[in-house]
Image (cartoon, rainbow, N blue to C red; front, side, top):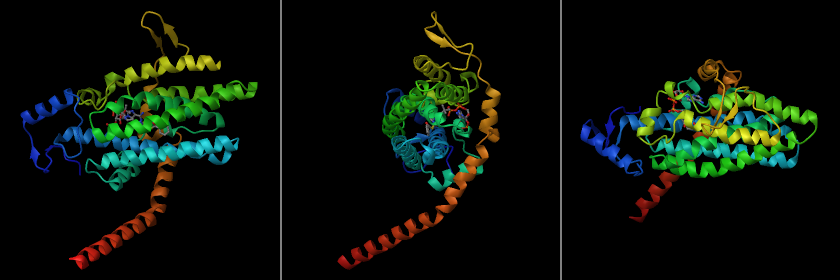
Length: 331
Ligand code: BYC
């Protein structure tokens, strides 16, 4: 399926050091790598893995919020939530298209998701029991996504970097609509403020886990940084997110659920408590509250959509035949 070797534009396998060195030189010179450029097999494989998982996260990410569309408290909230969930679907499609430029089909990627081979973000395996969670997802989850994705706009692989520019613009609207929901609750009745605090308590630690394992346990970071796929390490981005978000919570009169979180004058950053990595890995490996439901929902959507894919294909084939017949007739 994905080649491990060094693939040239003509599909030929090359293995030499000189090629690897020349490729790294292009990366170091901040040149964008484009789909038909020769690239090391490992570079291609890393991108297919990351972009594929990113696409799956966008699509699975529609589920926890989609769950609240029919119960949004006002028409305005419903319209904004509908638009946001639709945007996530669009992000998934740009990302699948970016991965397809690397020679992997959407069917293959979907099969890998459904079989459990491909991952998606751990954050979407947590339930959304209250309306406040919709605000908190926008504020924290989209906030974390922006922190992670802004540097991806400078990713060395052109199609991924370009997709990220548009995605980030939309994510920033998502973050604001979420923050505004939480602000309304935080400034509302004591019960509403408590809903906002409970939701922050539920989502704070999972949001920090979105950035991936700590640097010492991150299998891919070093190579991905060298290839400029990633521009910052997982811990660097997590710290940036904490530094940006704790003051936002304070402004709302809410408290992040971490007794060790405090401003450190010497480092110029917020200190934070230990993340529960056992929980992270348990959720990543399928043991979260919602893992089973999320995959079951994706499988149902994929199966229910089979007739649409078949009809689109039949239409495309018919059109191709008609065009071919017209071309022959014109000759
Ligand atoms: N959840 O070596 P590492 C969104 C896996 S969607 C699950 O550090 P890497 C949104 C990792 O895949 C947000 N698995 O990996 C949508 C690897 O396993 P494999 C999604 C995780 O790739 C709707 C292993 O742990 N954003 O924004 O260098 C509504 C070791 O990790 C997680 C993206 O996907 C996790 N949280 O760094 C609202 C952004 N973290 O593959 C919002 C693009 C790690 O070896 N992706 N793993 O089996 C990235 O930037 C990087 O892939 C990561 C991980 C920073 C996530």
